[in-house]
Amino acid sequence: MSTAADSRALGAPSADAGAGAAAPARACTHSIGARLSKKLALFTMLVLGAMSFGAWLSVKMLIVERNAQDLELHCDVMTTVLELEAREGGLAAVLARLRGDAAMRGDSRLEVFAADGTLLYADPLREHLATSRHVQRHEFTVAVADAPGGELRARYSVDYARDAALGTRWAWILTLVTLASGAIVATGSLWHVRRELRPLNDLAAQTRAISPRRLDQRLTLADPAEELRPWIDQFNALMARLEQAYAQLEAFNADVAHELRTPLANMIGETEVVLARERPVAHLRETLLSNLEELQRLAALVNDMLFLSQADRGAVARRGAPVRLATLAREVLEFHEAAFEDAGLAVEVEGDATVAVDEPLVKRALSNLLGNAVRFAERGSTVTVRIAPEAADHVQVQVRNTGAGIDAAALPRLFDRFYRGDVSRCCDDGQPHHGLGLAIVAAIARMHGGSTLAESYGGVTRVGFTLAVAAA
Image (cartoon, rainbow, N blue to C red; front, side):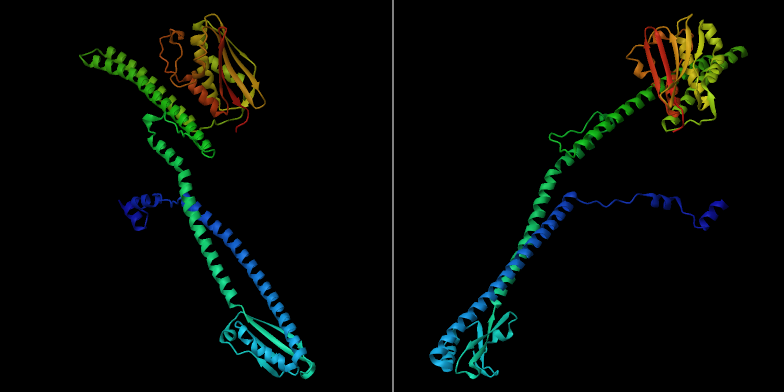
């Protein structure tokens, strides 16, 4: 109690706090359609805005250039007209012509100076010319013989505010067109993207319909897009593997229940019979010995299942110093010597290889293979343990026996858990076998980076495994 109190006093995090901290935060989500439509609208507005600005700027430059040319041409015309007036009537005729034409220069103003800068004539000062920011001026000279200095200097000012106002209106129109185009593109692309993403909703609905009782369901689309096909194929392949694993798990559970039920039923039945009435001590001892044998088989079954579970979780063999596999095989043969003699079988070891392996595991695999050979080999035949290199980085170990062959359809499942091929092939030794021996051989091979092999034809059966020379 003091330890818990000290932990609380030191500020140790409580279980509730830890659970709250471990709770995953809800991930922020977004709409692909909305995001894509926004990007398309923004891109459209940028492109259209740039093009509109370029067009507007080009038109502006053209108008400014045209106005400058018109201004210069207008001044040339006035120069010609005034020089004609000067030749016919002199300075007085020029000034009279200027006053007569003043009313026609509504958006402009003409000022005429003598050669010494004295103002001789000026159009009435118009307010819009004085305040406008779009006034352009051009100066020119007029030859007048009777004028002081023999010429007049003129300054012509024109207000182009209307052109500027028109350019401003067009700028607003182009801006509104750009914004409207962006809005139209955003709306249209959002509708189109959502329409094109509708198959994803169909796939989501199909996925929601899949349950442990409906693992045979697969994703299908009437007209799948090229981008979706790899996802559909990979998901369907995943579901096929999951369905197979689930079926194997159910079969495994059923097999385990079956293997456990028989010895448990035997022990329960024997115990009930013994307890039904008084029994002598010898009878009780016999019953306990029988139950002990059943318990030992159950313990062996549980240990085998635990070993297979560890192998399935990726356990790797603990390799020691390099050893000769032929030596390991002979040590295992000594353990099975009595069984071989009782079955009337001869045994031999062919080949050898020196490999760093997990010795107990390799001995266990060889023991399981030799145990199968003893049960299924023809009496008086020879069982051969063959060891030979396979490629450059693997060694093959196989046990060959002569006898009743294995059906070709059963070979692919030979290393499955609890699988028994043809029950009629089994020996008559009276010993139950729970069907995990070859599954353990396959697990040991995987733990050594190898695989299994099995073939049977012409009355000769070869079953074995490979071992990687170096640890991966």
